[in-house]
Image (cartoon, rainbow, N blue to C red):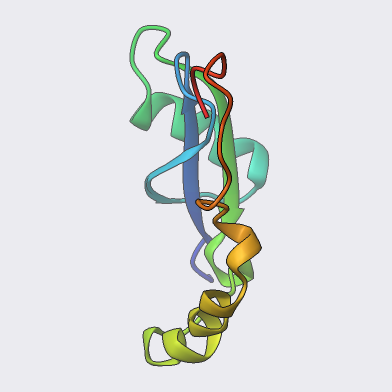
Length: 93
């Protein structure tokens, strides 16, 4: 008998805008993974959405490659427009 796949669990809280990784679990299907995630990782109406993703389907960059991936953004000053003067009536930006 083969082992059930490993699922990564992400939950969005009632007050949050983004899903947050909360843990992992084994389940035979995505539907069971969602049900198990609800039972294991949520309490009393704290979440509004659960995502489960097979761990094998996640691709990630290597920490050793961070310079190659993130260093080029320093030459794109338009991504961090700190040189603009904001009008006085603009409160939050």
